[in-house]
Image (cartoon, rainbow, N blue to C red; front, side, top):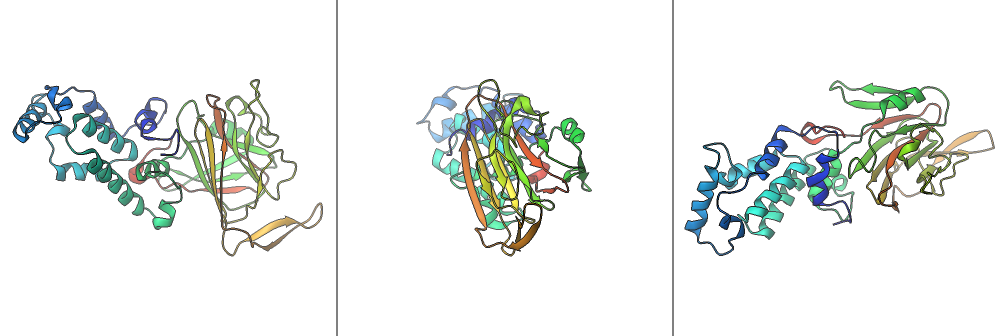
Amino acid sequence: MPGEFDAEHLRNSDGASDEKMTPTSTFIKARLSVDTPKQELVRGKNLSPAKRQKLRQEAGNLDQGSLSLLSLTNDVLQGIMRSLDARSLVLLAACSKSQRLWGSRTERKRYEQVAEKKLLELDGGRKHAVRWRHYSWIERLHLEEVFSRFNMETCSKEGFAFTHDSNNNLSNIKLEGVGPKMLVSHQNTSDTPLLRWRFEVLGNSALEFGVIPAGFQDNPKALHKCLAGPDGVGACGFSSTITIGSSLPIRLPVMKGSIVEVVATSSKLEFIIENPVNGFETVWHTNQVTRSIPYKGPTEIRFEQSLTPNVPMRLAATCWNRASLKILYEPPMGSPQQ
């Protein structure tokens, strides 16, 4: 698994996040807090089938007839698993592993298959589902379920206008006025183990994406000028090739129709930039005039940057006048935004 983003973070991330748990995940977590009546069920590797079945029945009657995971058949468990989000799948896997009810290899495969099926049912197909390489299917599912909220107070003061869809989910962001102005996330990497944004560029392609020290959320040039905090840790990320005056060392082609996805953990920043096949890139013709030319570069660019551990960072995006970003977030089963 890829470093610090693993099943342990999925199990523990609700403790640091302000998102609400689903009723099903709350149920799973509650069941994990209850001990079985017979510790032999936990420790016993060589129990006879009759003994194991007896202990299952006793565990199922633990709270006088209430539903217990230990008493469910495999068919029922499969039905539950198909309705769970990634975090709840990990909680259920941890429960079944601790009770040693099934073989570990078979169990891991079962959960991975459920996560894979759920991802492939989303729009985008297999290519979209596997875009994050070297991750398990459960980790990919969790990535797909996360979209970090914006600091609405700060962003609104900067002049960003937010549009909602018919389900009251954020769908579009536009900058009203001139830049540079900066979008920032509500949470930082010390609040939650995973931050993620995914946008389609619809307007001005002069943009920057990355992370900034958490305390610089009110400085609109924090990302643009790579400002550093008292500890010497500064902002990092990339700017589009048309952006002028950026202190970010990485410049990449971004145009109308480009999809930019950024994921940040406590020690790593990852990007995937997908550019349209028949796109037109805006370039500077003179110092004051731009023109559009056919884009002939790579259709996909991916890279990562190391972050200093234990330094709180927020997602950030610098925009200029007429910037417009479509929020690409399709939550499986109505999972809440972080």
